[in-house]
Image (cartoon, rainbow, N blue to C red; front, side, top):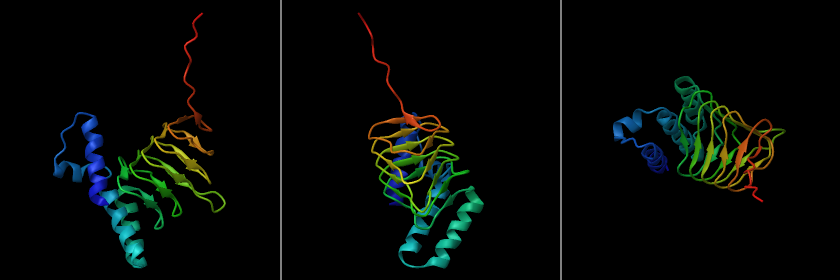
Length: 171
């Protein structure tokens, strides 16, 4: 899955018109957080808990990023800027989930979010509680999501609500 994570990150950089070599990709913000997360998950799946927790701690020290041992994301998971990212152990995420800095994905009363495929979460956004984030969702910077986000929506505000597109009113 790590290869798919980096393929996704290369695609994101290409969208910005940047040519990214393997060395630059490896040294970019978030790459070490992704590598440590995947290594931590590999250890957790094989019941190597002490090593898994050590990798979690190293991620916290190196990247200021805390990802719970049980958090599961499919291929294409990208942390663009890891500083301040906190993800609860019970979170489940789909394919191609992209997080910016300061994102918090946490549980409430023991229930955690489920995140769909092709989701972008902007800087400082919070996703809290037993919410479902649909596929192809964008969550704006500093939004606080406490209710489900429908497929294809853009969530903005505190509390976050789907962006309402203005309708063209002509007489």
